[in-house]
Image (cartoon, rainbow, N blue to C red; front, side):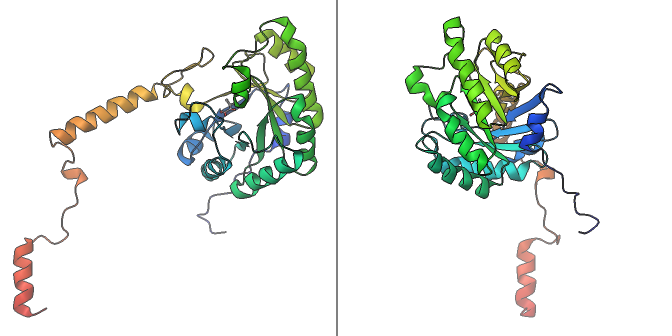
Length: 290
Ligand code: KIV
């Protein structure tokens, strides 16, 4: 390796994320492309190429239509952009539910073709057998319970879970099942705080909350939401930036300058390397026959 080559950075692994439980909060964000992955990488432990990219980047109404190839394409970009964070790629709806063998076939594609360190899939008890099958065959799995957006058509909407005690037992069983099956962590989405705290205390793997209170072992948000780039955000999102506003201001200033011809200015313009006017140069060339 030459002296100028960057020192290869060791990526955080799925077992390292598991080992953080009870030690330090796990900082996670979604990322869908190389540039934002590179910006976020020094600050986060885990980057999730979430299937929310279908809604955020591609304008779908839900995550249901997202194809596996799209996840692989964005997964590759994020792996190229990030050097340190564990990159987890979401398995989209229809790519893993049918059987453990189908799940393995598609998860292996995701891992080989993106270079990611783990995959995520939605579902609790119903996915436990698949999680065990994948983990035994070398695929680290992040589980996702509570509000599972891929089941939106069964749930009837993006509804907070566990706000009535009657719902608790089923969700707690889901958490225990994915943990016992070998998931290295579990996303708790849109859960009442008391339930999220109970689950976090009850299982040995880290809980990563999104709308599930500070009682979780770590947090995740959709990057565009926390940057202030999304047109609408759920109650649990804090906008840490005003990127949407900054983009609007920049584009409106650009439009004004193009229309009044102040952009491009001389400093944005290429001058000729030789000073003579083009016509004189052409004449000279004709005279010498060059
Ligand atoms: O797809 C996604 O972005 C997710 C997070 C919200 C956890 O699953």
